[in-house]
Length: 452
Ligand SMILES: Cc1cc2nc3c(=O)[nH]c(=O)nc-3n(C[C@H](O)[C@H](O)[C@H](O)COP(=O)(O)OP(=O)(O)OC[C@H]3O[C@@H](n4cnc5c(N)ncnc54)[C@H](O)[C@@H]3O)c2cc1C
View 1 (cartoon, helix red, strand yellow):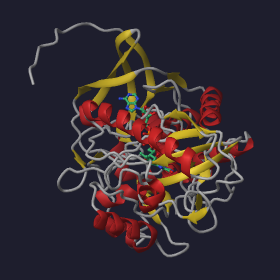
View 2 (spheres, helix red, strand yellow):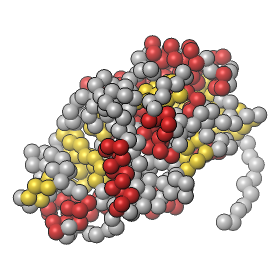
View 3 (cartoon, protein in one colour):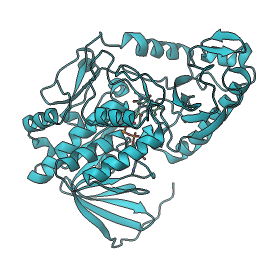
View 4 (cartoon, helix red, strand yellow):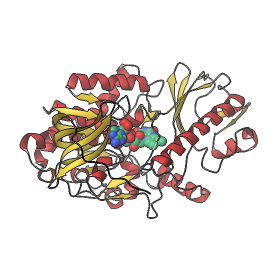
């Protein structure tokens, strides 16, 4: 690649904040709310025009269960958001228990986050990408932002990287891992919603009627006899994952895989979003002809954000790993607990690996009923930078357990802890390494989080 030298220039400082949160997904929203509610002056920077990340701009149709047992494990802000979304009639026709995959009406969730930020006094800057950092002696002093106003700096006492991809940590020189031992990452998905579906006829992809014949809608049924008109892509590309009845004949779909995508490479992201849109369109065209309930269906929307399951995992003070997961280790600096299983989508089009991973997610890796693991604060604290925390799917884990920690309820819980710790550090001026863990945990508990 050719390079040119960018001339040095003075840029305006947009503002100075106690806590600067980069990325407004579940982790970033949890962080910003928690920091502001604990007295910090907070800026939340988001590259799209809405909050919620994969749950809104990414059109993920549902929250993962808040527990696999009985009482919710993901509590605090995560549960508050869920309960308020339910009160807004924003979960469609999904079952309402904590053990279910609960539907998301993305417009209601956007509205809810806007309101919560306004009430908490969080300043939100939409349509703004964080592109770089300015460092001084192991601390970030400012992040560089790009938006319609041009290039500016945002100064802060503490920073939270909730970009999902650890963009800020990577720019700051924090070491990270990516993908499996060959650098291969899970496939990505373009989620979508469709309207005009007859919900009396179509209940679930696992039990659909193909022209009068009941069947589970698997890869096999989609590409075999009944599926002749579904253009044949490669094995694994037409994988269904989840679907939710969002009410009024509208359903949300997490369907299809695009392989060999590095979510930190914009050329590959550009390819994948277009390919995923093709899958979504093909599926609806197919379903209209062959699946009961879809006769009048139309594709309502494909997601603006590409569904990227994994990219960077930062190296933090502690790397949460498979041993911690299976032994359900309870850390003395635990800031969240959860029981979602290891969920890794096959990185290549291989039927045998696909079957193995499917079995692992549904059986081998599922913890015994009522058992759960905890997430240590140290996994949110990156090496090398004193005033940065990372929350959400790129925290410090091994490859396997990233597959468990990456879902939205837990990302929100991690965000809540990060926001509180950042507000505390901004007040005291300490490095995150020296966080008062006792105070952090006591305050989290008081503020509704479940941490033990
Ligand atoms: C296809 C797919 C299906 C999934 N299904 C489910 C499911 O059913 N249930 C569930 O609970 N979880 C599901 N997950 C997992 C979950 O959605 C994500 O892992 C989770 O949203 C991660 O939260 P986050 O806050 O870390 O990141 P994200 O939700 O990705 O949010 C990151 C935010 O940061 C913004 N951002 C990124 N970079 C920058 C930057 N440089 N500057 C400014 N803003 C930036 C993005 O626009 C985005 O809003 C799924 C994930 C995928 C990809």
